[in-house]
Amino acid sequence: MDPKGTVRSPVSSWLFCFIPLFNIFWVFYYQYTNYAELKAYLNDDDLSPALSTFVWPFLTCGLYGFYEPFKMGALIQRAQVKAGMADAPNQGGLFLLFAFLCAFNRFKYQEELNKVWQS
Image (spheres, rainbow, N blue to C red):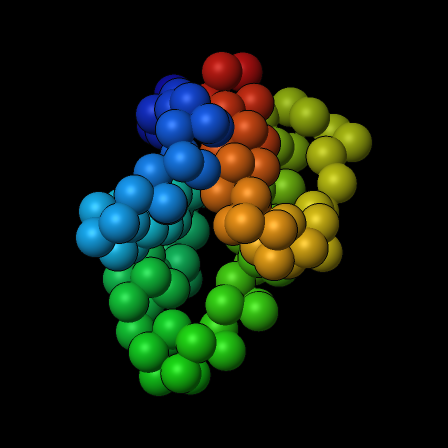
């Protein structure tokens, strides 16, 4: 049986991004946890949660934030296909759009991941 991730509330995953000072730690924790859960579920040795969460955003001076929603969209799509959702779309473009709308992409990430973890 494949290891499944934690089902979280999409609303709290999104709202924690707005709590002053706490949001800095929450965003890194949340992003690292998502990558680690996807790495375990997809059994993808090429995926590095630490690089994707901490190294690339700093090395690219934040420009990685424009690529990351596309990467997460592809990873979530792979996880959904593995979970049996054959018609799962890659929502990378939608995630990028939501990133500009009050970081709403965190809500959408969790909503889509919950579909995988609950299947």
